[in-house]
Length: 73
Image 1 (cartoon, rainbow, N blue to C red):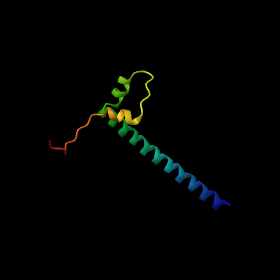
Image 2: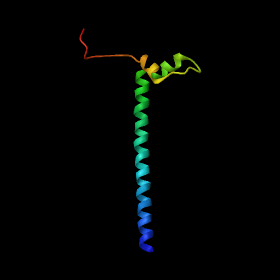
Image 3: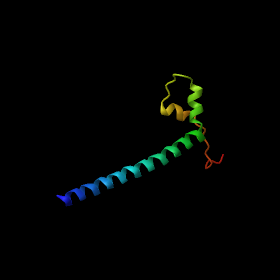
């Protein structure tokens, strides 16, 4: 019985470590997404649409600045 309790405790501890690792990854992803949204001006696009506006992702994307450095005209 004691061995089973140790195994369960170890599994619970490992699960706790996995959950913490996922929290760390999620936190860093959130920061990167927020930085990209700020750099692209997504919040300004939403603000210009006005209160209560319903914008689809494609509508927001259509207002993003486009810079194609590989195009040589």
